[in-house]
Length: 201
Image (cartoon, rainbow, N blue to C red; front, side):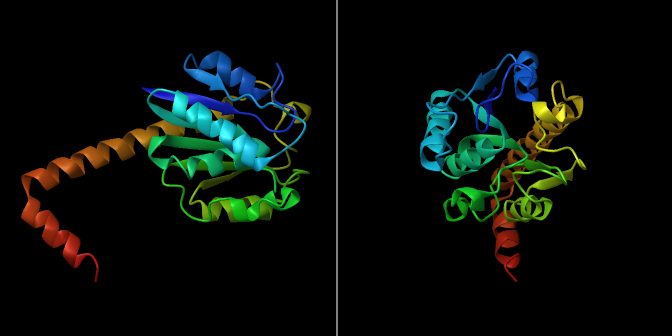
Protein backbone atom coordinates (compact mmCIF):
# COMPACT_ATOMS: atom_id res chain seq x y z
CA UNK A 1 0.00 0.00 0.00
CA UNK A 2 1.26 3.46 -0.95
CA UNK A 3 1.05 6.67 1.06
CA UNK A 4 0.72 9.93 -0.88
CA UNK A 5 2.54 12.91 0.62
CA UNK A 6 1.27 16.32 -0.47
CA UNK A 7 4.18 18.79 -0.29
CA UNK A 8 3.14 22.44 -0.82
CA UNK A 9 5.43 25.33 -1.67
CA UNK A 10 5.80 28.80 -0.18
CA UNK A 11 2.78 29.96 1.83
CA UNK A 12 1.24 26.49 1.67
CA UNK A 13 -1.67 25.46 -0.53
CA UNK A 14 -5.06 26.88 0.37
CA UNK A 15 -8.51 25.34 0.19
CA UNK A 16 -8.92 26.08 -3.52
CA UNK A 17 -5.49 24.75 -4.59
CA UNK A 18 -5.22 21.64 -6.76
CA UNK A 19 -3.12 19.93 -4.06
CA UNK A 20 -6.02 20.29 -1.62
CA UNK A 21 -8.35 18.91 -4.29
CA UNK A 22 -6.01 15.92 -4.67
CA UNK A 23 -6.37 15.28 -0.93
CA UNK A 24 -10.14 15.02 -1.27
CA UNK A 25 -9.66 12.28 -3.88
CA UNK A 26 -6.97 10.31 -2.06
CA UNK A 27 -7.90 8.74 1.30
CA UNK A 28 -4.26 7.81 1.91
CA UNK A 29 -2.97 11.36 1.39
CA UNK A 30 -1.08 13.25 4.11
CA UNK A 31 0.04 16.87 3.92
CA UNK A 32 3.56 17.83 4.93
CA UNK A 33 3.31 20.88 7.19
CA UNK A 34 6.13 23.38 7.63
CA UNK A 35 6.78 25.50 10.73
CA UNK A 36 7.26 28.65 8.65
CA UNK A 37 5.48 28.70 5.30
CA UNK A 38 6.83 32.18 4.47
CA UNK A 39 10.53 31.26 4.75
CA UNK A 40 11.89 28.73 2.26
CA UNK A 41 14.73 26.85 3.94
CA UNK A 42 15.71 23.73 2.01
CA UNK A 43 17.40 22.00 4.93
CA UNK A 44 14.46 22.51 7.29
CA UNK A 45 11.78 21.79 4.70
CA UNK A 46 13.44 18.64 3.36
CA UNK A 47 13.91 17.36 6.91
CA UNK A 48 10.19 17.74 7.51
CA UNK A 49 9.51 15.75 4.32
CA UNK A 50 12.01 13.15 5.48
CA UNK A 51 10.27 12.88 8.85
CA UNK A 52 6.93 12.27 7.17
CA UNK A 53 8.46 9.63 4.88
CA UNK A 54 9.89 7.81 7.90
CA UNK A 55 6.58 7.99 9.76
CA UNK A 56 4.47 6.75 6.84
CA UNK A 57 3.61 3.16 6.01
CA UNK A 58 4.34 1.48 2.69
CA UNK A 59 5.97 3.20 -0.24
CA UNK A 60 5.61 6.93 -0.80
CA UNK A 61 4.17 8.89 -3.71
CA UNK A 62 5.28 12.53 -3.56
CA UNK A 63 2.96 15.22 -4.97
CA UNK A 64 4.89 18.47 -4.70
CA UNK A 65 4.53 22.06 -5.87
CA UNK A 66 7.04 24.92 -6.24
CA UNK A 67 9.66 24.98 -3.46
CA UNK A 68 8.04 21.80 -2.14
CA UNK A 69 9.51 20.05 -5.21
CA UNK A 70 13.03 20.98 -4.12
CA UNK A 71 12.37 19.82 -0.56
CA UNK A 72 10.89 16.58 -1.89
CA UNK A 73 13.76 15.59 -4.17
CA UNK A 74 16.32 16.50 -1.49
CA UNK A 75 14.54 14.22 0.99
CA UNK A 76 13.92 11.49 -1.57
CA UNK A 77 17.64 11.30 -2.33
CA UNK A 78 18.09 10.00 1.23
CA UNK A 79 15.20 7.53 1.09
CA UNK A 80 14.98 6.53 -2.58
CA UNK A 81 14.15 2.94 -1.61
CA UNK A 82 10.95 4.20 0.08
CA UNK A 83 9.75 6.32 -2.84
CA UNK A 84 7.35 4.84 -5.39
CA UNK A 85 7.00 7.92 -7.62
CA UNK A 86 6.96 11.72 -7.63
CA UNK A 87 4.81 14.34 -9.35
CA UNK A 88 6.82 17.59 -9.30
CA UNK A 89 4.75 20.56 -10.42
CA UNK A 90 6.20 24.00 -11.20
CA UNK A 91 9.47 23.42 -9.32
CA UNK A 92 11.00 26.67 -8.08
CA UNK A 93 14.35 27.64 -9.60
CA UNK A 94 16.91 26.45 -7.02
CA UNK A 95 19.26 29.27 -8.02
CA UNK A 96 16.79 31.77 -6.54
CA UNK A 97 17.37 30.10 -3.17
CA UNK A 98 21.05 29.21 -3.50
CA UNK A 99 20.06 25.54 -3.38
CA UNK A 100 21.34 24.04 -6.65
CA UNK A 101 24.28 22.24 -5.05
CA UNK A 102 22.03 20.71 -2.41
CA UNK A 103 19.84 18.87 -4.91
CA UNK A 104 20.46 15.44 -6.47
CA UNK A 105 22.10 15.72 -9.88
CA UNK A 106 21.21 12.23 -11.10
CA UNK A 107 18.34 9.84 -11.87
CA UNK A 108 16.06 9.92 -8.85
CA UNK A 109 15.69 6.13 -8.90
CA UNK A 110 11.89 6.05 -9.29
CA UNK A 111 9.30 7.20 -11.86
CA UNK A 112 8.81 10.96 -11.82
CA UNK A 113 7.18 13.73 -13.82
CA UNK A 114 8.16 17.40 -13.89
CA UNK A 115 5.29 19.67 -14.96
CA UNK A 116 6.20 23.20 -16.04
CA UNK A 117 4.70 26.31 -17.59
CA UNK A 118 6.22 28.52 -20.26
CA UNK A 119 5.54 31.74 -18.30
CA UNK A 120 6.12 30.66 -14.72
CA UNK A 121 7.57 33.60 -12.74
CA UNK A 122 9.39 31.20 -10.39
CA UNK A 123 11.27 29.17 -12.99
CA UNK A 124 12.14 29.46 -16.67
CA UNK A 125 10.90 26.63 -18.84
CA UNK A 126 14.45 25.74 -19.85
CA UNK A 127 15.53 25.50 -16.22
CA UNK A 128 12.65 23.17 -15.37
CA UNK A 129 13.52 21.08 -18.42
CA UNK A 130 17.17 20.95 -17.35
CA UNK A 131 16.31 19.55 -13.91
CA UNK A 132 13.86 17.09 -15.41
CA UNK A 133 16.73 15.81 -17.55
CA UNK A 134 19.10 15.53 -14.58
CA UNK A 135 16.49 13.57 -12.64
CA UNK A 136 15.45 11.42 -15.65
CA UNK A 137 11.90 12.70 -15.18
CA UNK A 138 9.23 12.82 -17.84
CA UNK A 139 8.83 16.49 -18.79
CA UNK A 140 5.37 17.97 -19.39
CA UNK A 141 4.99 21.54 -20.71
CA UNK A 142 1.45 22.79 -20.03
CA UNK A 143 1.95 26.03 -21.98
CA UNK A 144 1.49 29.54 -20.62
CA UNK A 145 -0.19 28.64 -17.33
CA UNK A 146 1.70 30.74 -14.80
CA UNK A 147 2.84 29.06 -11.60
CA UNK A 148 0.23 26.28 -11.90
CA UNK A 149 -1.43 27.44 -8.69
CA UNK A 150 -4.71 28.97 -7.55
CA UNK A 151 -3.85 32.40 -8.96
CA UNK A 152 -3.36 30.75 -12.36
CA UNK A 153 -6.76 29.04 -12.13
CA UNK A 154 -5.62 25.64 -10.93
CA UNK A 155 -8.23 24.42 -8.49
CA UNK A 156 -9.57 21.00 -9.48
CA UNK A 157 -7.04 19.74 -12.03
CA UNK A 158 -8.15 16.51 -13.76
CA UNK A 159 -5.20 16.56 -16.15
CA UNK A 160 -2.81 16.68 -13.20
CA UNK A 161 -4.60 13.81 -11.52
CA UNK A 162 -4.25 11.79 -14.72
CA UNK A 163 -0.49 12.39 -14.55
CA UNK A 164 -0.52 11.19 -10.94
CA UNK A 165 -2.35 8.01 -11.96
CA UNK A 166 0.09 7.44 -14.83
CA UNK A 167 2.92 7.47 -12.29
CA UNK A 168 1.17 4.81 -10.23
CA UNK A 169 0.84 2.64 -13.32
CA UNK A 170 4.53 3.16 -14.14
CA UNK A 171 5.54 2.26 -10.60
CA UNK A 172 3.35 -0.84 -10.70
CA UNK A 173 5.05 -1.99 -13.92
CA UNK A 174 8.47 -1.39 -12.35
CA UNK A 175 7.59 -3.51 -9.31
CA UNK A 176 6.12 -6.27 -11.52
CA UNK A 177 9.17 -6.36 -13.80
CA UNK A 178 11.51 -6.50 -10.80
CA UNK A 179 9.54 -9.44 -9.37
CA UNK A 180 9.63 -11.29 -12.69
CA UNK A 181 13.37 -10.69 -12.97
CA UNK A 182 13.96 -12.01 -9.47
CA UNK A 183 12.00 -15.18 -10.19
CA UNK A 184 13.92 -15.72 -13.42
CA UNK A 185 17.20 -15.32 -11.56
CA UNK A 186 16.12 -17.93 -9.02
CA UNK A 187 15.15 -20.38 -11.75
CA UNK A 188 18.22 -19.85 -13.93
CA UNK A 189 21.04 -18.47 -11.78
CA UNK A 190 23.83 -19.53 -14.17
CA UNK A 191 22.07 -18.07 -17.20
CA UNK A 192 21.40 -14.78 -15.39
CA UNK A 193 24.99 -14.61 -14.18
CA UNK A 194 26.23 -15.12 -17.74
CA UNK A 195 23.88 -12.42 -19.03
CA UNK A 196 25.07 -10.03 -16.36
CA UNK A 197 28.71 -10.66 -17.21
CA UNK A 198 28.28 -10.25 -20.98
CA UNK A 199 26.15 -7.10 -20.61
CA UNK A 200 29.20 -5.13 -19.47
CA UNK A 201 30.69 -5.15 -22.96
